[in-house]
Structure formats: C-alpha cells, structure tokens
Image 1 (cartoon, one colour):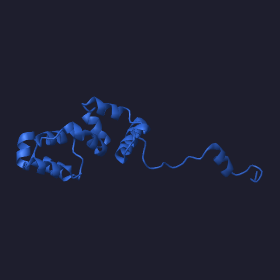
Image 2 (tube, rainbow, N blue to C red; image 1 turned 60 degrees about the horizontal axis):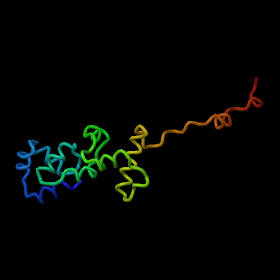
Image 3 (cartoon, helix red, strand yellow; image 1 turned 45 degrees about the vertical axis):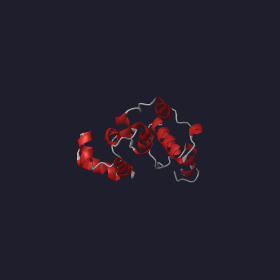
Image 4 (cartoon, one colour; image 1 turned 90 degrees about the horizontal axis):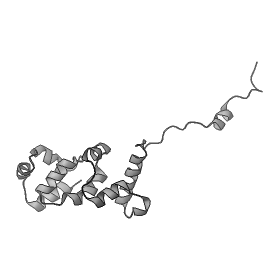
Length: 140
C-alpha cells in the first residue's frame, strides 16, 4: 500500500508536522506510510485529514485491505452510499476486480467467516458403505 508516501508528498508535510497535526507518533505515521501493514481506520483517517485529503473517498480502498478485525473496529462508513455497498454488495454490483474482492470478503463475512482452505472431506454414508468390508466375505 504505497498511498501514504504519495499523499504526504502531495501535502508537502514532514512526518513531524503530520505527527503534530494528528497527535499520533512519528513511528505510527511512518509505519502507516510504508504500507507493509494496513493501518487502523482511525490512523489512516487522521493521516488523510492532516494531508488535506477526503478520508471518506479512501474508505472503500481501506475496506479492501483491512482485516476483518479492523473493519469491525472501524464500524460502518459515514457516507450512506458507502454503507449501502458494504451491506449489499451483490454479484450484479460487481464491475471491477476491486468490487469482486470486496464482494467475496462480504460474502465470506455473511457466511460466518469459513476457512478459505478446503476442509478434509467427510465421506458420505454411501461412500462409507462402499469402503466397509462386506459381511459375506468376513470370517465368523
């Protein structure tokens, strides 16, 4: 996530100036700007506002990168149109790869966050009966 440095360069602010404006530490802001981890929404929002960016325009991008825990902590977006997308991302609304990723995340969340790796298959009763030894062939 390279957005942090680009946004900061556009604003022409140093990390120290950003820290003063956001009341966040320089290390927190530097970590957020590096993009190796997705920052919390409150950190990103403060960062963007300090850089004179519209934080609400960045919310959908953040939603795509944030963990489930981060999204739960952030709550619903403030803009009504963004809330609708979060609540009702359906296949007919998918227009881009980013939309597809978001729709899949929402589908997974609605289904109770099942594991993404396939689970070991449990044989059906019919499959179990095929693998069980036959009574006619076994010794008494």
